[in-house]
Image 1 (tube, one colour):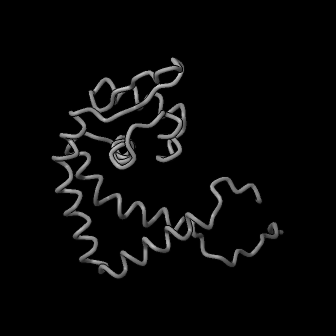
Image 2 (cartoon, rainbow, N blue to C red):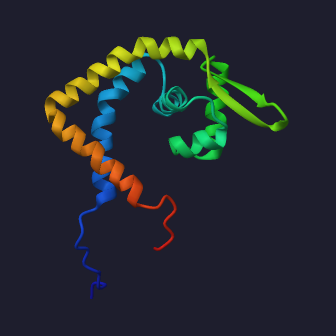
Length: 151
């Protein structure tokens, strides 16, 4: 006799979001690969570009990268000259991560291609659809607690 299984009535929202993410990232992955930067490195560069210098803990939170992975990634990015890590005045245990001129030059070379990819996506979906997506995703980010332990 087969074990009784529960009936799942909801579609898998996390799976749908992951599928959309992968389709979208496929558009950007080619560009990043061409310039020798990984998706995670690009996330860090974008975060530092948009927010400014941050401590590694903050980068991990913003970019959703685990602390152990982030430590190695920042070390590699430092070796590649993409970020600089300086000690915080008054607290030698803390470090502030910043973009370097090399990473800013890389962004300048990549930006036209990234913007062209966004324009193609907007052309396929329409500007209104893109705006609705941004609005719904912003709404979800505000409505769903970051560390929901209710399960």
